[in-house]
Image (cartoon, rainbow, N blue to C red; front, side, top):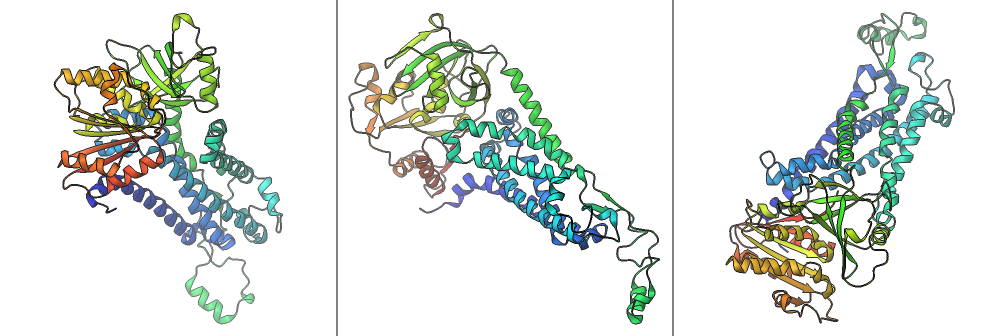
Length: 558
């Protein structure tokens, strides 16, 4: 597969530029701090006592300060949604970079873990040196209470030592529970341990209070290495003393040392306050429970939920976060909106696949005694559990309308981001740029197409009546050839004629789109299995037709 420079720059250039800026900032901070502590006169005696452990511990601490401040920003979902929705402020390239916010959060988290190991290792060396290199000449410089003090005792009886142990423990729990296998096996473990970040930041603020490392405050009166007034000349060799007195000054005063003022709060207080303010805003916004209007059971264990909330506004492609206290008070789960409120219809909806403990318990509360393939229960017939909605939040699928040509590829339940786009076209939304939409939906079972079969047929008929049959190019693929007796009803005829058995030939599909839409930027949007996403991503970066650029956008939740 030949990579096109034009396509690669369109898809990868922005994020690699940001990556290089981030790596450059980390490298510059590390090197700058290392040099300050290795060659700075105010750290001469401390460096003489601790050696490279001092430089490495402080350099890694600077990198940790930077990343502990940056790691919170990608999680400010409301702020990112505002920036994404303000087209006069953000360009399409900027908005596409926002789609990588979760990746940037993970990168900052990994760097925090790596440099924490470096920081801890360097400080373990420092503790040993504090004990073995106890200074009788400068008692104020010591962190150990006496020469030869047990390093473990220093760690477990000082503020920096105790808080350091707690920080490492919390970070270990957060890092291990963030692994893919833990999140799939038990999302609750990931959720609860990740919320330990609040305790982590509180302890982080206290970590520097102990003042383990001190710098010299009176360099002019006591130049590092100067000859003290009570120094015995008899102890010096004649020639060595003469050479030393020519170069060095005599000390005018004793060296004075004091610990640094804590600086970590300067780095993290801004992002932390911003994040806390946003969480407070989101808590207030989601404090009122929504009204569940309708619950619909679809084939293949899919539940459709229609809700009503006062002053709720959303754009196609956005997602919301659901919280059901009867299932779990602290657990929140994101779901893409499949229907947005309009002027004539105030309800909004989501489709959720019953997979995992949370969705199973939630479904049992919604439909405890119902059996069958399709059941619709209006609110008057049932008392539903309390449900809270936070959002809406931005996602890559919002950009579907900002291209002249868009290709939407869905795998199974991954169709939900694009269902809202189809609803918007059916409801007559105006003011967008989209001139042609290619929609490809791949499912294992034929019954899955019934989730949005009526929506697709209604949109097809609407476009035919408006004399725009080429506006929507629809392809449906079913990968399992068993039990294909479906979509045979007369009302589903437009879908039956577009149903194909097997898997799409993605290269031929993109070649066809490239031939039809020369010299255009085509937005490619994918929500589905990693295999489909990886294949499309590679094809979008490869060479196609001159002037045609495929910009890849992948749906993911933060």
